[in-house]
Length: 87
Image 1 (cartoon, helix red, strand yellow):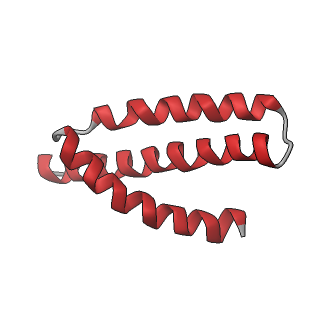
Image 2 (tube, helix red, strand yellow; image 1 turned 90 degrees about the vertical axis):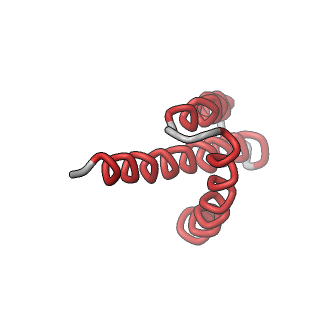
């Protein structure tokens, strides 16, 4: 695998991981506050959201490019999350 292919694969993986952290962490906090689940689920959600803040720092490009691209990725992931997980 060439260096460009490897960087592309890692970048896509980081986009996906960050999306899971943002959407999954937010969903866990939602379940805690809105659906009366345990506060421990909210604490886990808060930690996962903290990880969401760290994951993008592993991207190779500049902040503005990363967050502009994340916006589109998260919209698509949120639609699929709602369809698959939240019904």
